[in-house]
Image (tube, rainbow, N blue to C red; front, side, top):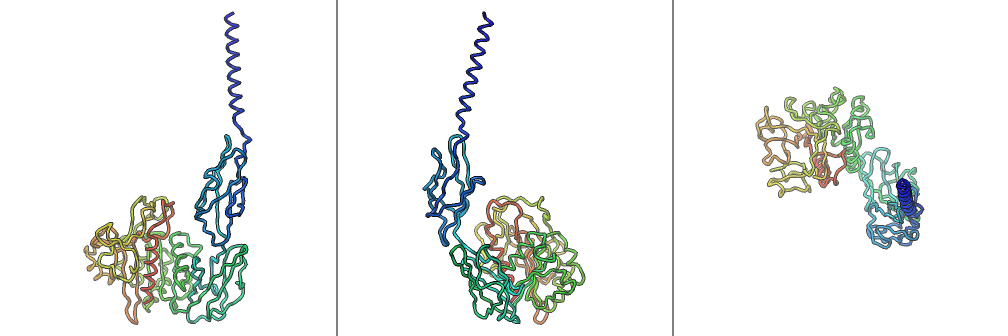
Length: 462
């Protein structure tokens, strides 16, 4: 009898358990609709991809996307967060999550105003235009020897837009020329102005082409130069070796190198070295940065015994310096009025001496590549002693060196009338164009790097 009661109780328990599991299973509504049926802004229906979970909305040109109110259509019983009718800033992608019963989907919504852009403008295959996207202007500087009445443009622009006049037609750029892009019912017009100047500039690279530069910092610097320094070109050191390029037409040349703490083999080639040295001795101006500062002895900028004595750096991405929250820059005590510091933001509050910050604290990982003069033997800890031995003018130390008696991180070697040109050396590790690791925030002081570099080119052009 007890055995019968036991089995009856067990059967009842199993039945209850099965019923509970079945009820739980039935409560999971896997057929609920958690998709977006409609997404409308200012009367424009967005394109919805319910597989990729994306919504894209294309609005008329000049629409302010920073405060828009979407109307979102959903299945019965579904809700969405943020809610339909809630004002949103769509200057960057916004996530919307749709809930319905036990199901939910998160959509990425992008909104942009119709816009067509000219992204690259080059004349005669070598003179790059500087593009101001906000004002839609393009400025190109060419040598005075170039005939600007018959120049052929190479133009890259938004896919699907119609360009007028055609890029295949030569143009007379004696006066500004208007180029228009017809795109999705809107017209976007750029004004192109060509200026003639005797100043021309070269970025000296270790690769055959700019795109082939393997070092991201060097490539970023070169790309910036071609976009921001009028009448600038990329020149491979190999073309100096084979004689296919001469430097005599350039006002200044820039060699930025950050791959090793020694000069690359192509730079030590006798023909290359003698070509650059001859250019310098005949009045050509030189800008060296990174470990390219080691070139000073070979080029005759300094005596061979007084080249930078402290090249260092993390030359691979795996062993970068982690410096969260730290600002890096240069101390310029006594040199604040020098032309290369014109319009730079100089900080005299964070530290009691004048500092120009070049890397902000949001950039945690830095490659920390530098090539300064360290004021130890054979130097005294004194800028005047360094000047007497190298012939240069010291302009900066590291930001922590308040009285500037331990390092020479930036220096100028003044030219001689009818003789040697002027040389500038930037060996500060904070002079960094590219950051391999993801940053907490953008470099707040990047504009100081850009202004410093532009000022150096202006200084070398005087």
